[in-house]
Amino acid sequence: MSGFLEVALFDQDNLYRIIDSSYDGIMVTDKQGKIILANPAAATYMEQTREEIIGMYVQDMLKKGAYNRSTALEATEKRKVLTGLVKIKSGTKVLSTSIPLFDKAGEVVMVITNTRSKDLMDSYIVAIEQERDNADRYKSAAAYLGRLEFPHDAPVAESGAMRQVLSTAKMIAKSDSTVLILGESGTGKEVVSRYIHQNSSRAKEPFIPVNCAAIPHELLESEFFGYERGAFSGAGSRGKPGLFEIADKGTLFLDELAELPLLLQSKLLRVLETGEFQRLGATSLRRTNVRFIAATNKDLKQLVNEKKFREDLYYRLNVIPLALPPLRARPEDIRALAQRFLDGLNRKYQARKFLSPRTMRTFLSYNWPGNVRELRNVIERLVITSPNNELDFEEEAGANAEGSCAGAVLINQKPTYRGKLKKVVQEVEKQYIDQVLLECGGRVSEAARRLGIHRTMLYRKMEKTNNSENLNNIVD
Image 1 (cartoon, one colour):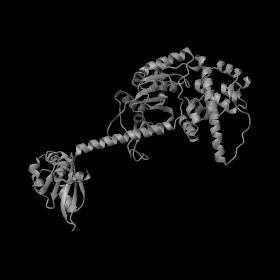
Image 2 (tube, rainbow, N blue to C red):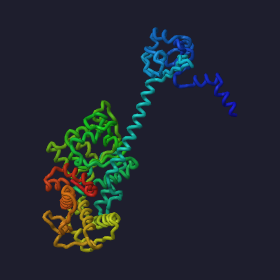
Image 3 (spheres, rainbow, N blue to C red):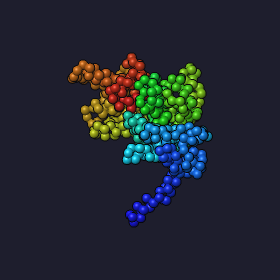
């Protein structure tokens, strides 16, 4: 059997059949430039028949204007492999590679030329670039999501108000319409948006949550649209996909939407209307297929009247409004939420804490201005600071200068510090930021005001100290 294969492989007729079957153009010239072999594809690329070109000299074909250059002649003269673009008489371009073959004396005896359509090569390059972009997008999505921590539990809905919200959310999840979630800080807008995503046809694609207030204004455009290499000083060598690319085919959740500057609002409107955007430094448009869910705790209509929010963007986003009730309007959910948070924290800290009846009564009677986020913060502080498994606190400590339930768990012991001054200062700063955020129910704008710094600076300080808990529990 192997003998038959050897004969078949080296049989001259089969060799010609193999060459003739090649999709690429194959042409062989001798050292004088005479064409001694050409397959049908090579003749087609030169827009002549095989019978017409075999026996001709490439120099004569150049004089006749059959094509503008001969890589075969150039490879013979330079005695090396040569690749270049060749323009055929009709204007078609082909990519041609010529390989010289030498005898024992080192003289060129023939040149083998391989030819392929430039348009076909361009389509391959485009396909490869698209694959690379997809790989970059998924890599960026994984890196972006890897920096986040978020609950995967379904929203708590013991109250009739929340059951109605989830019923509506599940119904609108089946469409791709834009949703605008309204509600006070800390009411669970991201949780509901994730619930919509998980019940949609996009559930297997990325869910990308973005806090618009957490991104410095000067970085917003590059974060949203991405950039090409060299687009600006410090840009990555390969460029970077933006959030619209990362979330492609999935859901992009824009929290704190009212914080977007007017210029970016205009560009966001274009993406919403056309599905097209342009990377920084790019000359071509890209397309994205994203389902938008936006959220805010502010009155966008009032901001429109104050010329702080675009009216056209407001109406484009306000396709399906969904209002979340504050925690004080759904006391039935307080007990269930408190228990869920406590169960999670017990697992995290390997504890066996439980809420005393008095603590639960206080929770049920408290107004919760910080809503669900404040409840979670208070329970975590109780878990960490309580010396006993039963979580309780003195009723008379239940109000501090800010009127917050969180004041019930403040510790009066003086801390003891160790180490160099810089480290101690950082630790004190971190503790004070934690305290103010807790007292403000996780409301970043209020905390920044009390600290006397800009909201963006507060976010940066929280990221610098790697305080992922605070980053997950903040609101604005």
